[in-house]
Image (cartoon, rainbow over all chains, first blue to last red; front, side, top):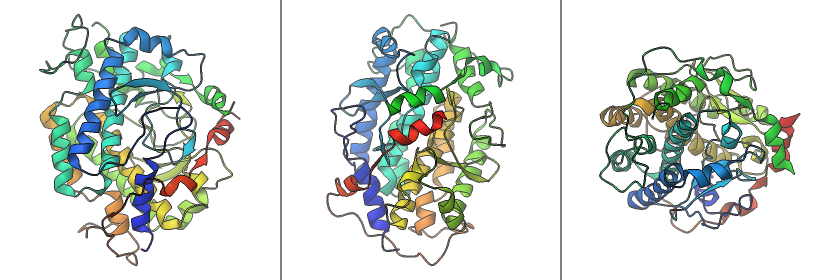
Length: 204
Length: 204
């Protein structure tokens, strides 16, 4: 298929445009090697861990539910930011969970942080393997193993596993969660909120 | 931290609610074992591969750029669908790329399919490891290896690697793409489109 090289070029190219929506200054560049992708992953992950630990009050303050649909971004330069989703499609990268600010004041703070941690872990992996679309199978294994040798955001934030890295977390939260024992499928029914009204705010 | 077990319960619970926005009938349930998560991954992946190969014309027809912001969902029951993002936050699962329909008519079809393939691979992995948030490090490796033993959506759709599974693809597209040789960082500058106006359509 003649266009397929260009097709992946398009994917990589999309990753190289600056997002005008959030005004993020850290230019996203297409990454090619396992090492570059891992470095990008590690920087974004550290940024998110910081947002959810030592910068938590500042982060929470930015997640004003009265504002537009917001996301937590960990940037490749090690900074984090709360910003609306990109206005352009295709987006430069897979998007993190939308509208995290809407639930800030209606969940227990620790539950809200746990949810954001799990969504962030998922997003970080999605971004890494979006960059890694050109990798072959062996390199994907190598990338995953490098990623998996780090504790997840959730593990760092909640100290599920002791990390030997500097996580910057509040070490007051050391409890190890016990395994989930019962069906919790409806627990959050009351925690969910409509975002359709909020998404409209993006349209100015 | 008292709420952390509930925090992950909230994440799993969020994954168990039916999304009223899309009216999707396949109930999303919280998955616990590596095998269950892998089965879910494989079913979603097969559905997306089918959407992008044998069902491509039908899929493309559903991606009308005049409609609201749409996503391609591979469902755990093996079906695919084109639907708006969930209206509720937190969403039941990480969201696939938004607004794929807006670029349908302004990209070469093969480029559009390639982009959707790469975004879908990324989303599938994000969903699998969102379900796998409770897994320990060894189980994450096991899950990843099972996933990585399958060719990616991109590989199947573009036959980068010959698969011994039934992919259902159009075997007319057998060319192997050559490695990307030059900086393609600005190639898609002209392909991107504003979605802010379109996102507003979700608000009815």
